[in-house]
Every structure is written in structure tokens, then in C-alpha cells.
Length: 100
Image 1 (cartoon, helix red, strand yellow):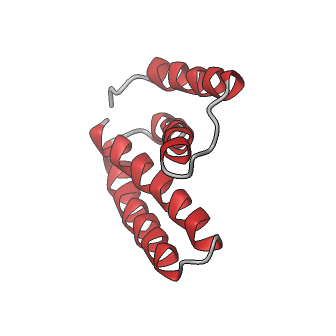
Image 2 (spheres, one colour; image 1 turned 90 degrees about the vertical axis):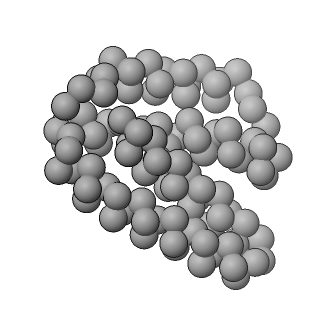
Image 3 (cartoon, one colour; image 1 turned 30 degrees about the horizontal axis):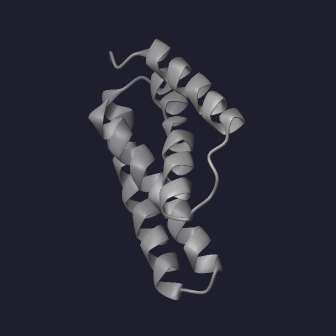
């Protein structure tokens, strides 16, 4: 499961970097591409280790990371609806479990 956390974290950071790049900083675009690239390579490794039926839904953790990162890094608002929605995703991912 640690590999899945890392993949989702990298992809979430890529999204934040792309958002920052849209606001005018080219270096953030490059950082986003690197995060996506590394995350994609790690995803190939994870596919050897986990069943796809458990791995792919677990990538939904990316939404939770994006919510937190966009709040702390970009200053976006955390609302009750966003929080409850991500909580639903986290419950679903936890029901899948980390077993192979």
C-alpha cells in the first residue's frame, strides 16, 4: 500500500504544479511532468504487485491529496461537501484493503 500512497501523492503534486504553472511559472510545469512521469513508472511496478481491481480504485486517494494540497498550497477553500466527498472515497479505498 505504501507504493500506492506514493503514486497518488506524486500525481496530486503534479496537479498542483500544473495549477501553479497555469498562473505563469514554467518551472512548475516541468515539476508536474516529472511527478507524473515518476508516478507512471511506479504505477507499472505496482501493477506487478497488486491486482488491478484493487490498485486502480485505490488511485482515488489522489483526490484526497489534491484536496489537502490545494487547500494548503493554493489557499483553496475546504468545504463540508468536499470533506464528506473525500471521506467517502477514503472509506471505499479502505474497504478494498491493502492485501494482494
